[in-house]
Image 1: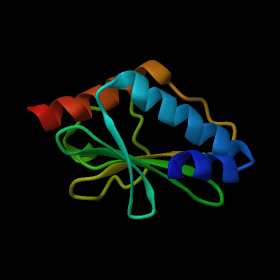
Image 2 (image 1 turned 180 degrees about the vertical axis):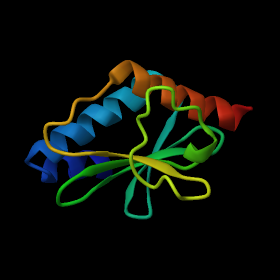
Image 3 (image 1 turned 90 degrees about the vertical axis):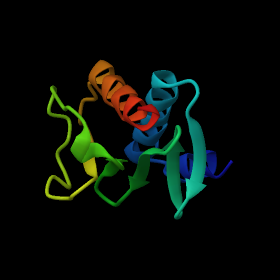
Length: 114
């Protein structure tokens, strides 16, 4: 699978972070669909939920409908001015609030299922 290949190609902290985020997304919603679109990993459940992109200095978790989600743990730290999307940029050494992130993923899925 293309996502496995991407993770394997990232032999530094970014690959580890990508794999961790992927695991959390799949745990948060066992029925989520994993795809490779627009040259990136994308997850959907009755609509687009989130995508993970890797950059030189960060791993970006983008929520397609993030502007409409409650973010009580203030996870979103990028793209805050966008009309629809919100992102979380993870940099080397950043902690991941796994339970809060799973809640956010579940909220994004719930919004799609509506």
